[in-house]
Length: 326
Ligand SMILES: Nc1ncnc2c1ncn2[C@@H]1O[C@H](COP(=O)(O)OP(=O)(O)OP(=O)(O)O)[C@@H](O)[C@H]1O
Ligand SMILES: [Mg+2]
Image 1 (tube, protein in one colour):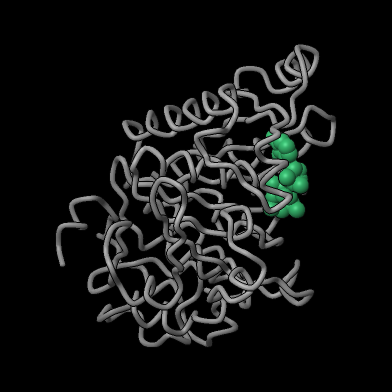
Image 2 (cartoon, protein in one colour):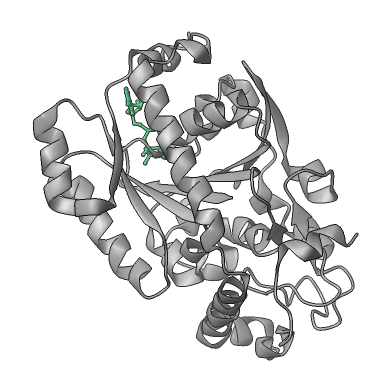
């Protein structure tokens, strides 16, 4: 299952991503955790110290390797230079699985030991001013999008992405790459305004969007969120002393997370798992093509000097059956 955490800056995306990742690890599920947010804090939230977090290999700096591996022997993709972040897989492309060793994980993934198991962590790398708002070509999250577009995940395997709700993900199509999107919102007008914007984009693409209320203090907060987002409100999470201890660099064992918050994490997993039956690889592949064509005409063709529409393999549909083929 591919799961995104999005929301306003400071709403708690990283905190809730990290708690959900810890929860999944605790139930023994295989997890790839991805930090695709502008503020790269997921490593720290998973317990890495400053030095370890700073030394994480950045996907954004290994784009060449990622592209060369993924394009494999696909005859429609002549070179890494002409492979853009939306270039879809086709016959000859290499796919990624959650549970395997491959050169992409080898170069970009860091094994993080948690209390009850280990997860793979991948990070886009720190964003600079040059990354923001401009130059799709250089987009750091492009590396994540490429990987998601080449990933075949099954039931009971999880890819959890800590993402910003920024315009970059809307332009590229990244926001359509998930089985479910958890929008983290504090019970404030600003918190839910991001929800409205996301919902607007999501509507046309069949995105499953659920709101996770965070830093919720009482019934009044719950009533406010319910009134603003209606049935999209999945669950709420209160202030957590466990999280506060972690922020001080003294995380208790995960089993000591407050009961109510543990229950909320289980609700997130149940909601994510329930989307499995709704999966539609055809639509997923079609959307990949849609955004590729959009990026090709808006900047890609000009930038690469080739007709990027020719990269599309018309008969190719990503699906779990392909995962069996080595
Ligand atoms: N449920 C909670 N209980 C206690 N503290 C929390 C909770 N949720 C978030 N926080 C705290 O609020 C702050 C912001 O949270 P976090 O960094 O997860 O937000 P974010 O949405 O990832 O922010 P950014 O946009 O900067 O990446 C952090 O100091 C975090 O520890
Ligand atoms: Mg964050």
